[in-house]
Length: 283
Image (cartoon, rainbow, N blue to C red; front, side, top):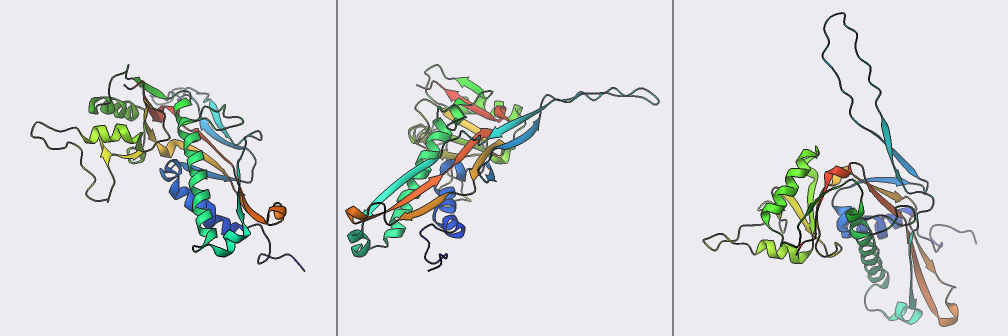
């Protein structure tokens, strides 16, 4: 019998898009925050960018125009040595037959959640080398930083970080705060002299909070004592175009089990490191 998309155990690209890619973009706080995503067929991506600025000058009529030699740089994403996220989930054939809920849907939710958690942990606080595993936002070189020297997070500290971001020619509409839920809750408890809370949710969007005009995305994936403010339009994510979800029907046949294997490959780097401001060493 010829193999077709109706009997093959490996999901088609359209099925993977519905099962893993799109739900993952929604579930992952980092991917949902609006970075620039570049799809690749598995090969490395080189994103060119200008180096230092040139210095145009004022010239009168018939005057020699000075020449400038611009410097160029590049951001390398998804080198051949970059590892993938891989997981196998086993389940019994009895469970597949007797489950009162759609087993494929339940496994999909579980896999999406686990992959999103792994990605967010790596992209926010990962200490990878950027060659075999992604390097997280807190480890990026060239970012701006404010040392809190064990002080508690306050609104003035956030305003200082916002000021540094503005000096880096950021897109204000793309600025986002990332902080642990405990830090955000502490800020929400700040009251004025009349006992009114200073921070209020955005009245135009249900459940959306803003600090100095920028959206707040609470996440447990940041390590303790750190807050980040980033222009996510200047952050690049490379995504392998062939994440696979494959049903393994024979591998565990002696246990009367089936399994789902998921493989996804991502990388991340800042296009403009100065557009990321970190507050570190919070008390």
